[in-house]
Image 1 (cartoon, rainbow, N blue to C red):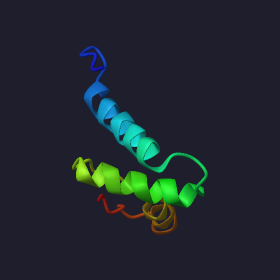
Image 2 (tube, rainbow, N blue to C red):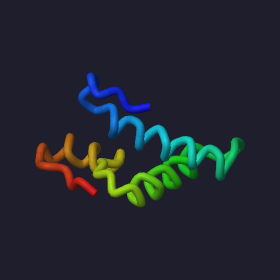
Image 3 (spheres, one colour):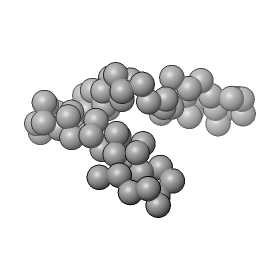
Image 4 (cartoon, one colour):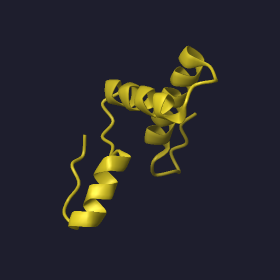
Length: 69
């Protein structure tokens, strides 16, 4: 559901849709890293730019600009 009064409503809707797709395809019982990789794949198929945890960790160490995928 997209509500125009919220700035990121469309993006939020896409991300939740990706999470629901991953959940419906994988179900439960896997380690977190499996869901993380599946969600990253699903988000990339929707052409949504994102940072993963490794990018954020290296950004903290180097204080540079992280690479947005």
